[in-house]
Length: 105
Image 1 (tube, rainbow, N blue to C red):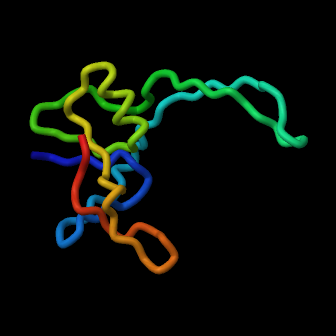
Image 2 (cartoon, rainbow, N blue to C red; image 1 turned 180 degrees about the horizontal axis):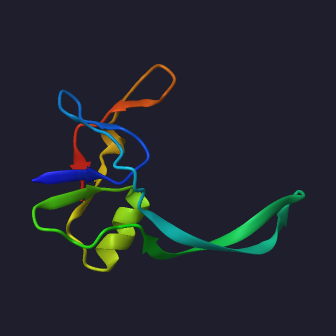
Image 3 (cartoon, one colour; image 1 turned 120 degrees about the horizontal axis):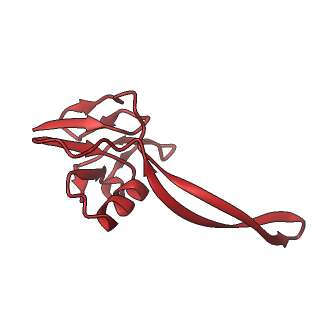
């Protein structure tokens, strides 16, 4: 199975391989509208739109994407995408992710 990383970060599996970024980053488009402020700080309503830069499904290929792209892809029936399991990530002393145990679907 070919695994393509469509995030801007290396994805390291704990005690396993590292998947470098492919150079393409899949994202979900965002629309924002001003809805007011809180103590002078602007507040916007945000809605998510289409997925951008997610390749068409390809035989024997899985795409690593962000959790938000995974959610949007599931809504349109894509089963060839996964996201890093950051809920169970190994982190350094400053909270930065070092590795993940696997993927979520």
